[in-house]
Amino acid sequence: MKRQYKCDILFDSLAAPILESGKLEPMRQYIQHGTCTCYDHVLAVAKTALAMSMRLPFKFKKDQLVRGALLHDYFLYDWHTVKLDKLHGFAHPKIALENARKEFDLTPIEENIIVRHMFPLTPVPPKYRESLLVSFADKHCANKEFFVELGHKLAKKRAISAVAHAFSLLIALLPWT
Image 1 (cartoon, rainbow, N blue to C red):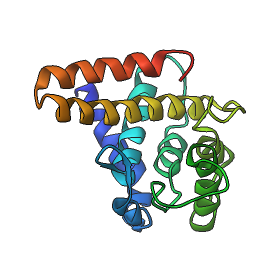
Image 2: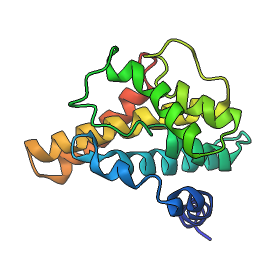
Image 3: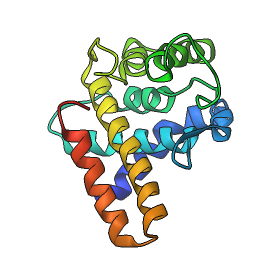
């Protein structure tokens, strides 16, 4: 069985309880990066983190990895228009955690994934390898969403899109992201 097919089947089984609950549906109405909705963004982050976990030589708690990734941006507001006491990038992890706690029973790993996914923008580092992996996947997906959209706007060509994908991975790998 091909690796991607295995990953897709595993993702579907791990994500089903949260996705079928319907509680993530409001995320479809909020834009996250470019034209990507929060819902599509958390799906991409969860799938990316799971795929990475299957390739790395470490053991991951994949069920908690996927659940935490799906809930990492569960802030449920339009961050482009809502004014907060702090900038959205600093405030939304705690808001997402509060919202997720109201709707779901979370493990310590899932809580840490949600509240620490913005590291190093938020200074306290992730405590678990699952948290670190979701943080990395989040940066990769966010950069990809932004730069791919930008590439499509600039040229409407595949070559620019491929460059944008490569550039987003480079940015995600740099130590300052």
